[in-house]
Image 1 (cartoon, rainbow, N blue to C red):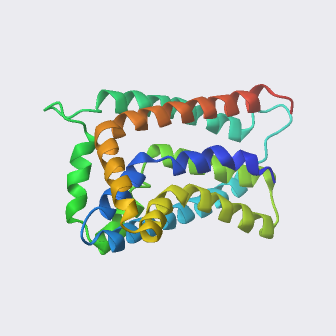
Image 2 (cartoon, rainbow, N blue to C red):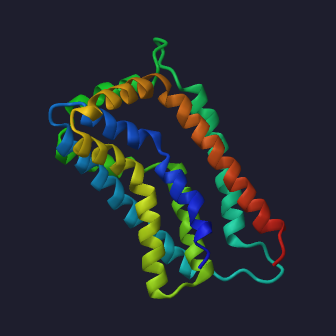
Length: 223
């Protein structure tokens, strides 16, 4: 199985600013460690469920014919168009009516979230068109390759690990570095509150370009 086909989706999911922002902000509160861990677990659980569903869907799609367009290429082109649209929408709504950054509202909402609600938040954060498209593309890659059971488990585990790495990294740093991590996390929270919306636009555009290239290569390349 070509694991490189899974890289764009895994990296795209990992670069989800809202998830990273939520965990970083949760770590800054009194009950933050438990809530941050619960949010990360909910996020990773949602990735696993979505990937399993996508793989099962990819296995049931018909194999592309010699003269037909690969399903994965068509999905990638559709994903590119959707991601470009989401980037434009995010650019328009990046500020609230009072002129403050839209991400500042999210930082205030994190203050009242405990572990139980944080788990649900982590799972709900996956309910995004961008993430569904990326995990669907990964599932189709499994279906096209038709790997063995062992290859599926290993590739799936790597995909989930990479996708969830950015959610786990702030927690690991906070636990291992202790008080030394507080200043860095505080700086990250300030940066997210100020630039979070713009960084999401940049990530969406980069992912759209990657999916466009994948789609064009799959559509126009030799079959």
